[in-house]
Image (cartoon, rainbow, N blue to C red; front, side, top):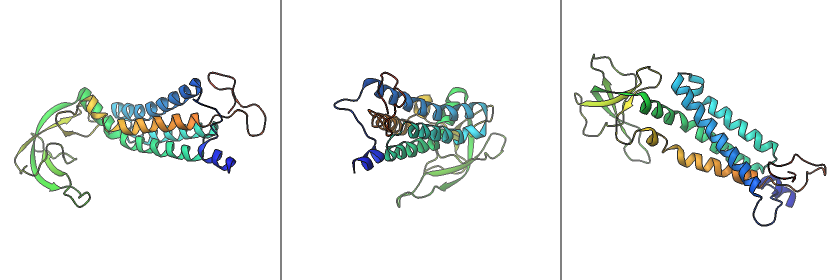
Length: 226
């Protein structure tokens, strides 16, 4: 049972508080993982590289972090939790990256509403309202706008949208709180949970000696073995 518990949750072979260097290693791994996932999406959106902007590169970073946790022999359940949170962070990062690009170089343009539709219902309640719009030259935008589109909005009404003059990210409705900081709000809970899961996984991977009895690699701050 002890072997099974160590395999699933990590051995955590220390008494009292974990070594400071071990906590630091977990924090470093978590922040590097989260930074690479979000950074890849932002870089892809800024430069117009679809394979990075759509979250695919972030998924690769999440897999790489998972592999690192396997290499340090963290508990398999904690590895799974960290991997799942990394995937969720990678899937949410593209929207935040688009918001950062629009906050940095977006320009505001007035558009005209042509139709208003209900978005998909959530938990039985009415979803967001989606407005189809055309620009000042009568050219329809390829995306429907939900920011600023309300139940009272009617065809012919004017809406303000923010668009990327370089055309690398889709336009979206302009609204207060959509700056650079606001764009990252949705990522904060996922990022915090991801970093915390990495810290716990790394800390609980602490071993006084390797399973085979031979020395394992030293830690970042001491001569202990995993």
